[in-house]
Image (cartoon, rainbow, N blue to C red):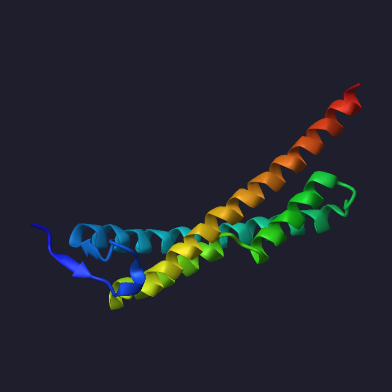
Length: 141
């Protein structure tokens, strides 16, 4: 049988034990999310920096798609959904090291916030792409 490790009563109703396999999966997920977050922070920063530099070098602020990309790049960098993933990783590592159920609950709340933020940005991007598509079609007519 797998060795069971008990979390405190704050974890939840009837789910107060995780076996070593589940703890291993959570620990692996914490390490993986740290690499993902680091990569995404670097990628978004470089993307934002590149679009701003290209906009400045061409001296064409009238170039609407480039301007929109630079604005949304900066918005994502400062309101970054992957920040919640970073917080999830940090809280979950603490919860796993200290067997703290309340920290695990906070970590899962941060993971939920990450998915909600990604969904919000996806909706915003779809609306903007739809507007750009409609504007492009209206130019052809």
